[in-house]
Length: 150
Image 1 (cartoon, one colour):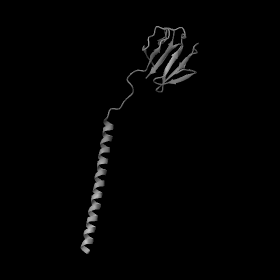
Image 2 (image 1 turned 60 degrees about the vertical axis):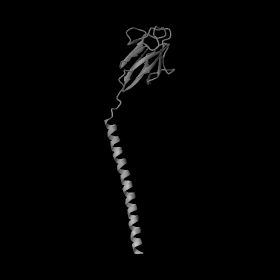
Image 3 (image 1 turned 45 degrees about the vertical axis):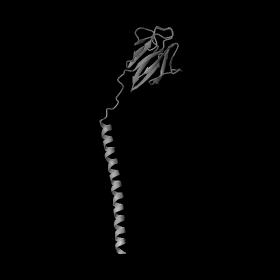
């Protein structure tokens, strides 16, 4: 009877050792895999800032000579109006001489109306003071609608 008890204990110890080794093996697989994934993520090229310059793209040129799809590349301070000295000169009767400006401040673009007669709109809302804009927003000067892309 004593031999049977010793054998049972021996089998129990073997089972426990097997379970321990199985869990240890799984732990090692998870550890090595996660280490390799971290290393791959570290070496992977990261998406940096966009290389395409911010721009306004004509969506609706109203009665002006601007065709849909016409693109204006923006400067950090871009003036917009009917006068030719503006960075973006819009030949449209509802656009004021110095209508508005777009400016880059702390990695964010802002539109500011300069007291134009017919107003400046962002996504259909009239601009009052400086208004932040994001990629995809529709900015309207007079009757001309442009999509902001950054």
